[in-house]
Image (tube, rainbow, N blue to C red; front, side, top):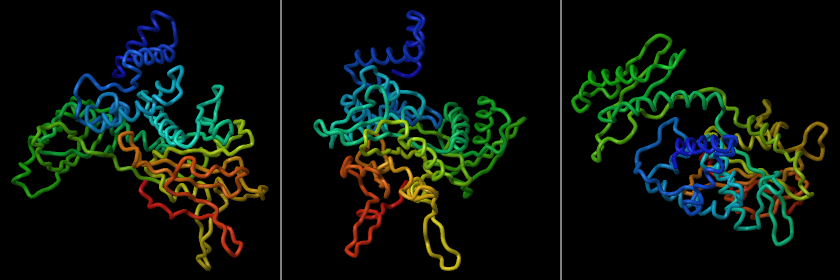
Length: 404
């Protein structure tokens, strides 16, 4: 059911029952699941094989797309959700939420639950409280994992969203034929008129030479109106033999600035350090869903173990004492010892779960080491005991290639 129909049904229920919108929406979703055989994502009734809009909620791909990859994603999510404890439907409501952060975080939790359930008995938010997952083998309590997700810096994501809204207006009004369009926002004191902007772009395209007869590969034009200035690039494209169905506006915009992913990750992890949870004197880990494209493996290592630094005279490399882990002033026994390790999950989509990468980075000063192999990981920073008695923490089997 598309979001507009869910919203309308929830509003109707509110009028009848006096419930809050969130309660009405949750119950509408639960009723819908019951009517569709408990499938959170049933197959769409209307064919849609085109791409999503740049600013469109990402959940719409699973809700509405009829592409084979979307069908595969629906099948996986429905199967995983059927094994997830959600008695009141609140988790399912997050999975189909139009808010991208709610949807993405819920997907991260769902995949992690599926991975954990292969190795242990998993409970979710026991007694309605965190951490997210507690792990058992038989009656033995093994430890807990809290899930968090790291997204692109808010200012940069806002730039993308503003660009995406303009791009979606153009894609909805113009047909991809001979030219791709790219644009940058030079000035935007107000939102441009979508109708006027699309008419201007259409006129420019009509005036451009036939790309088959021209050696000029790019044409540049500027759209200027009171308080708005957009710089456009027109690039020739090949005709689609199946007919036009794609976006006429290409990806963008170019984003620049200082990358602060390590600092943002460190601060967020510090807030999740376990102080508010009853950890029962057992291991505790945090799993990060890495959705920030700038959060490279270097940034993750810097967040946890400190920024790299070099001594000017010798160029000897070391790490600063600003990491989540390590020793600090007044903390000779180590920082954040309640945290056993950090898991980082990246590069995954519901239709390709086997391509997900899960790594583990241990805290050298953890009060309780996390159980090995729960969940299975692709690589791990772990303790290595050497024959000469030296102890080190190294990537095993090797440091993964940084493909964030």
